[in-house]
Amino acid sequence: MAVPTPASAAPKRTFPKDFLWGASTAAYQIEGAYNEDGRGKDVWDTYTEQGRIMDGTSAKVACDHYHRYPEDVALLKAANFNAYRFSIAWPRILPTGEGAVNPKGLDFYDRLVDEILKAGIRPFACLYHWDLPQALMDKGGWQSRDMAGPFAEYARIVTRRLGDRVKDWVMLNEPNVVAIFGYGLTDQAPGLNLGEMGVLKALHHQNLAQGAALRAIRAEHSDVRLGTVTNIQPCRPDTESEADRAAAIRWDAVWNRVTVDGLLRGAVPDVLAEKMAPIVKAGDMEAVKFPIDMLGINYYSRCTMKHDPDHMFDVWWGDPKAERYTVMGWPVQPDGLYDLLMEFKHLYGNPAVYIAENGAAYDDVVSPDGQIHDSERARFIKEHIEQVHRALTDGANIKGYLAWSLLDNFEWSFGLSKRFGIVRVDYDTLVRTPKDSYRMLAEIAKANAV
Image 1 (tube, rainbow, N blue to C red):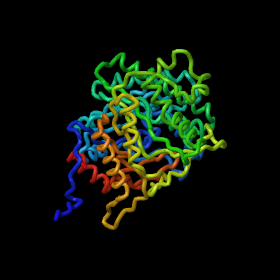
Image 2 (tube, rainbow, N blue to C red):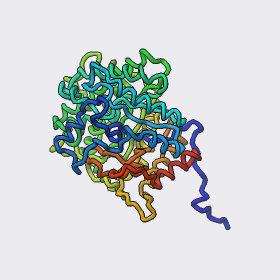
Image 3 (tube, rainbow, N blue to C red):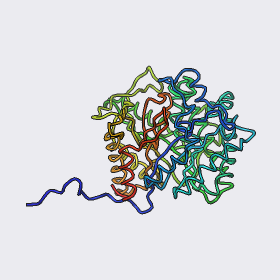
Image 4 (cartoon, rainbow, N blue to C red):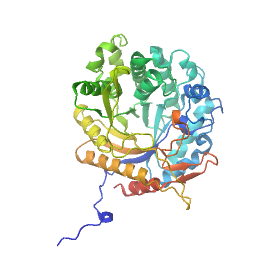
């Protein structure tokens, strides 16, 4: 009789030798130092001042990464990570978004990049993770086509300074989230509640700015890898009714396709062509399309959508009927990651992609031993890595997995109340404590297997 194999002795799933393991962060969420060394004001500073952060906290200090970055890079190294995606704060470089450069801002990222490289880690720099300078917001923000010029110039300034060492550049982070929750609704900065046309303008103008920045960088740097990062969520209907199926298709177009089809195909989704006709000018889609080297995908769950005429695009969230949820109320659906990776293989010519964000917020508890035994987060991450391996086995072109996030941090409109980190931050003392999920990821990265 065959003896069952113990779970601990189950065969490991091995990843390619050049596979990247790491974590991601965003400048506004971790840096703090909001008024130091010439940094300008951004839309999230304004949104916070308006009293719109749910727990009443702010990012004035956050994780104090601006002063403690050597400690945080050491955490990356100790986790056996070989990649780190961070963002550069636009208002640190150009306090008003354009015009005079702030040298102290560039100096900070010089020091950060050197520290990352010294640790043997590959830096992935994101130029825009939601911190739009307030002065540009005052000129219309992403409702204005004129944003393309300042963003391209900002990209030139930063890559001229850091491009000799940073060889992986991504332009935007989650332009769909910015457009929908910041311009269509009031959930995030700038919180304008402009409805459907506000969303579509913000999406298209970010696409235009991204295209301009990609061309500006490529014109001066032939040896860097260029791409972007977007949040992809496979959209499913709440029921099999014709109305819900149509709603899921519409939401897929807004959430996923305007960004991805614009960049990779130079196309507007058919279902949105009529609505976007007044926004898209002659030559725009040629300016949006660009041959990128990599695409970062952020995945947290699927979207389950239903027809609802009381909301934008006649769509609203339905019931995902999941067995587990994070404290954000998001369903845990690891197989959705496999679905989207295979979709990219089949629909977009199997481009090089990496998971730029994947993680979960849970109500962590510090145990009597002083540790954080975050078994739910560890399970979440492991299950999603298993789906990445499954997609790799089935031919998807996946280059790496970066967890969200290295640190507990300022979770946007939720403030400091939601913890996504694999490292706990005590916001009173700023002491960092690696969690069990951190140790698990360190073991996976070391073994290059799960």
